[in-house]
Image (cartoon, rainbow, N blue to C red; front, side, top):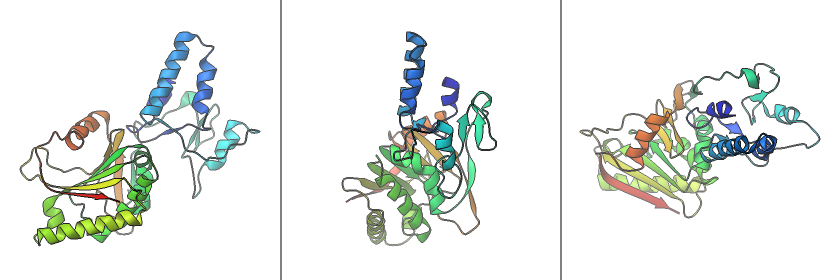
Length: 283
């Protein structure tokens, strides 16, 4: 159980489905006769897996109590509306069903994706839905550029469907403001973010914050592009811009050590960058 769970979660970039929705409870019951100590260990492993998003539950998935687990799960593989990317069972049926006792997964589920809004949303879905707060870190993220509109709208739409209460955008002031009238551009950016938030049906009480920083001489200068939460992070090679048709973006999960460093910088304020402008949008 411990080895299985170690292959999943935000640091691996893949997630184990709690399917059916009482799967974890079934596992606990299965181990209840293994002895008090072993049963307690399994309970602890499953509780931690839920807390750290290793094990995630998606509601409203079909389940036929007259069928076994595999016949229920197999139809949700592949296709345009695939729920699962793969299954783990007692018997392997390559390439999508792997045998539990011979499970070999790469350390991380990094991939190359098309630089379009739907793909950015797909790889960000779990963190956006289940994290209380998310940061988008991209020095070149200028909301006034149309290449960012569709991506931001898609991410905002996902966030408003889940637990996320706040999205913070970290950008470089020089890139967002350019050489124009700073006050006028700030006003335009605020209006743009408010419009995007309304288009995404951002729920009342939830907030979008944009921090413009000066980091040219900072030790913690923004370079990498990330989607970050306290649960984990995703590194995006080219940030959050929608790219021309055919262009690809390298994406992958942030490892545990780097994630801790990024939380210090962008969640706990342990950086030497100067925040020169702060825009906050609440609906």
